[in-house]
Image 1 (cartoon, rainbow, N blue to C red):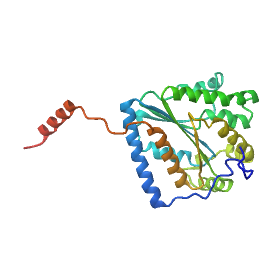
Image 2 (image 1 turned 60 degrees about the horizontal axis):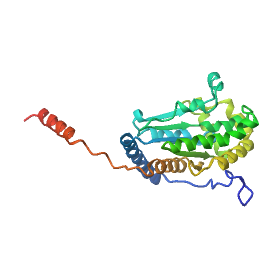
Image 3 (image 1 turned 60 degrees about the vertical axis):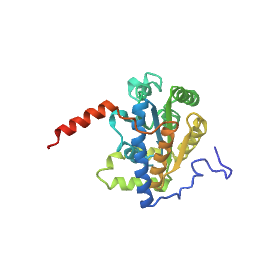
Image 4 (image 1 turned 90 degrees about the horizontal axis):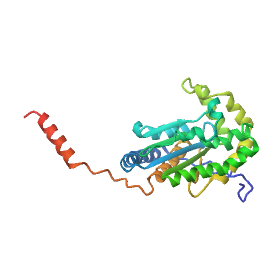
Length: 267
């Protein structure tokens, strides 16, 4: 949807937002501590959550996810990088492949791209017919409402960078032997269809920004600003209504460990 100036939603973002290194380090450390508290609370209370990352190529989705994963116990945390569906997956409803990836009680599942591919790349590239992608908005909203009604907390993040910033990041990847693997011919295809992707992304945000599962759209030209803003938003969503106080230690267990430790010490 256009704003009052006539710009599309993503184009109207203030791309100048930045964050200094000192503030970034402080806020990153604070939000990572919150994630540790959130996970221990989930493991005790059996809460469950889904985190969705969408956005432009090279916008920083992976960097944000890595900072979250760095402080999580993998037994209750899973990252799902979503690529094109396999032939077997294509033989089923497009949402089917996501059901098996949903979190169990006590778990947090992060989707690096998601079911929104139906109304983004599949719409632009013609992999979904017009009737298919048009009805997908209601299907997705219904799917997410079903999850929320089942007790799943949902955080949805969309990261946007402008054309110049994206090309600059592609150039840095090109000259970094450890990051070249991220580049593909699809990057050129997507840049060639920049305006089309702007249109379908705006449509998606307008039609799937619901009370049950709202979007947070972030101007991501500054990696540090975008990363911390995304992580703080996720922490807020995942901690809402959750008691983050550490669980009380079983007195008998504490007594047993105390005695074991004392017995093992010399003298």
